[in-house]
Amino acid sequence: MAVLSYNEILPKSIINYNNEPYEVLSAHIFRMQQRKPVNQTKLRHLVSGKVTEVSFHQNESVTEADIEKMQAQYLYSNRGESWFAEEGNPKNRFSFPTDSVQEKVQWLMPNSLVEILTYEEKPMTVTIPVKVDLEVKDAPPAVKGNTVSGGNKLAVLSTGAKVNVPLFINPGDIIRINTDSGDYTERVEKA
Image 1 (tube, helix red, strand yellow):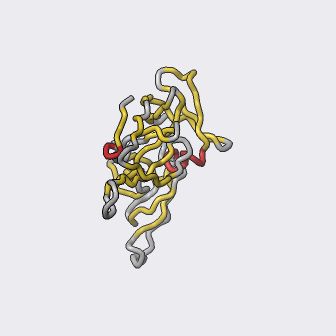
Image 2 (cartoon, rainbow, N blue to C red; image 1 turned 90 degrees about the vertical axis):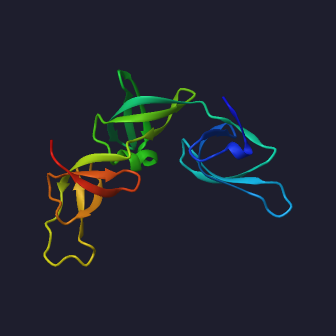
Image 3 (cartoon, helix red, strand yellow; image 1 turned 180 degrees about the horizontal axis):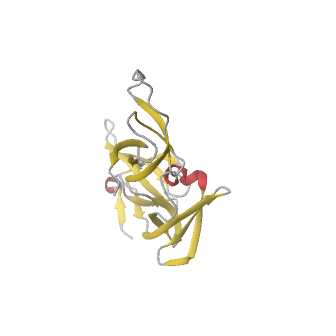
C-alpha cells in the first residue's frame, strides 16, 4: 500500500482514513495568509455512503486502501437486500442492504454484470455501467398540445424505475439511460 502525502490525496483515489475505506470525491489545496497549506477534501465512506469533510495538513499522510475488483451478476432484490453472485462462482453469493445500493440496482436487470469493489476480501460497493439500455414497460400516450413542460412524460422501465422521456417514446421501445444522473439520453434501435 502506497503512502500518500497531504497533496497527493486527489479525487477518485481510495484511501484508509481511521482504518476505514473512503473514496475521495473532491480535494482543494489552499493556504490561508501566513499558515501552512491545507488540503480540504470530501470523503465518501465505501460501506455506508456517508460523506464527510476532512482537512489534511502538511505533516499528515494516509495510505491507499487495498481495493480489489470482482465481476459479479446481479441476482435479485427481496426483503430489503439486493443479492449478487461472483461471476464463474455462483456459490459465492453476497448481499447489500437495498437502501444503500438502490440508486444503482434500479437500473439493473437480473443477471446483469456489475463490478464489485472489495476491501479485505469483503464486498464494499457496486459499480455499474454509466449507460444502460432498458425496455419501456409503460408510458402514457402523448396528449396533443401538452408541450408546456418541455414535451416530457413519465415512463416505467422494465426494472421498475421511473424516468422522464420525450413524448415520442412508447411501450416496447428500448432507451438508453445515464445511470449517474438518471436521465434519458436516447432511443436505441432494436437488434
